[in-house]
Length: 164
Ligand SMILES: [Fe+2]
Image (cartoon, rainbow, N blue to C red; front, side, top):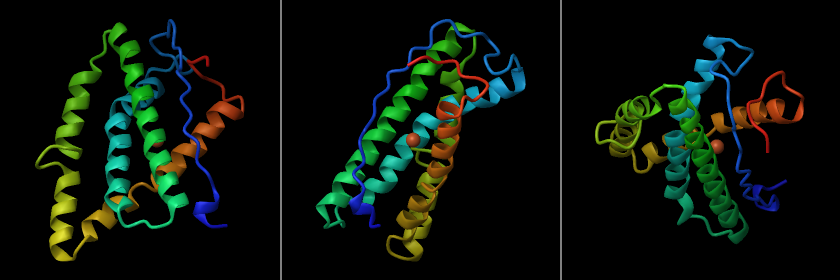
């Protein structure tokens, strides 16, 4: 099956968190804060995936594939928004997601000397678009996240702080 035979559809779930216990995963602080940290790192990571894919959009001729790339970008935007929405829960618990998020952005994304920009710039100097392709390949872990999400939402995972 060609990727252009699959039609991606953007889903916008609008999660409602309500009153979330401080250690919302199995009452375990370690697991909870590990996942909390993902909520902080992922928003810019999702935007990073969008930037990575968009660099190739102008090269794609197949309209169906182009539509799927746009839908992928839309879906990643929704993911970023939902992760950022959880920051409000963390703020209410006295946590500081904003400063940690800013640190992650400075080191890994967006900023002039971030890992993202260094990879783009260094590898693109070695070979045209090599950096673009290297960064695009990092979108692969998104598949693992999709598998985890399926486990959490469809397999009666033992914890979930949300209701849809
Ligand atoms: Fe995502």
